[in-house]
Length: 501
Image (cartoon, rainbow, N blue to C red; front, side, top):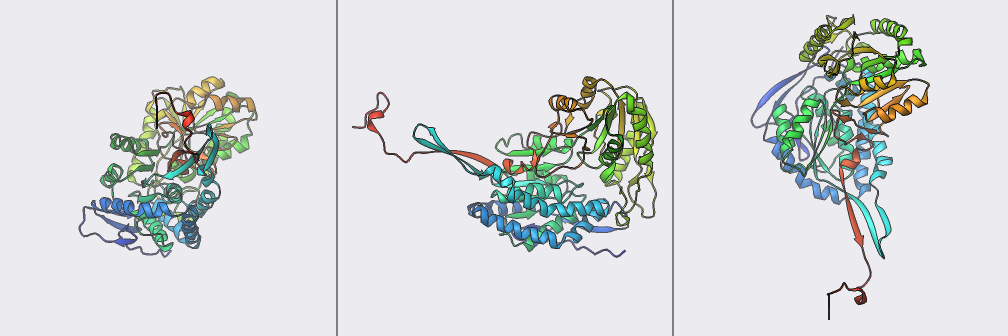
């Protein structure tokens, strides 16, 4: 297999790639699917954060003054670039993340689809609205104006699609962007910036800076940044919140993962429930914020479901992305260590290991692991294993035939992103809609995957009430209310005590 050599282009600031004059740090981008595949070496310069923010600030007002249709045309040109380079982007996503090529291709295709949905559907959420007689004989108008410079902090698991989900609505609404990709997947970030360059956006409208934790910290804390759009772990999201605490004017949209539960009730279609849960738990090697990590089974179907799920889990293919297996590797060695550590923790906390997760040696040396299943003997809301997001292919199986008790388990982790319910009983579904503290609730459909035509966000540790996807354009704007009075002053209606004569 011949892979394209990638040269580090530098940071993309004010419409061009610039190389460093000095190096404040360096890191290597090694494919987790093949440790011999050295994708890219990054040298970063911390003061590029300031340069990028200034470039974005300078470009902001000219960009915001363009009409919506003018900005839309730039994005439609970018859509054409996304489509033309879809295969190249898919292969690079696969190399950078290790996810299978079919999975990476789905992500690459989502880039152009996001532009379509934003310009055709989401933009309606910020349409101007005129209110006749908002006050007597005075009309009111609701308009949505852009915020300014938006910092976008990208994750590794969807290194193109998830940042794109912030960047596209931010740009369409009239904001400018400074994007920091994950240090785990910088090559995808560089290709994304090259696509922006190809679409010929005005200089400074989109900027990209590489770096590690300190780069991200400086970006979110920069005085010229008006908003921070983040997808990633709860721990990093919490740090962003702390860094911006004194910058009360900044909007922060934080999507921070989940510990998602699937409930399979006694009347469920078991064929569908087993398949959908398998996909929910193990797609992308469990490295999805919406992945299924807990399954709660009604006693009447628990034995059959568990056996069928176990047998299907054993047959999943694992391997290098080019072979198109179901599962690829975890992102890095630290993720493997965490995954193995939680196997041991589950056993210590009185869970039975039905299928043990372990590191896997394959043809290509990488960060491969096997899926795992643990049977929870007793629900314990204080259990570290039961409430921690592992971000790997592990499933905890519970039993409960009391739906209220089941909902207690669902709500016990502090996270609140997605729940799935498999049942033919609509009353149970309606009960879950009321009781489950989640931002997404799927009926007879797995937790994984979401529509860009719907909002995507969670409660508790999963987010801060800034749902993305269809609703992203809302946090990229500020509603501005206006009272518009074209009439002359009626001197007969002056307030008591006022005289103009």
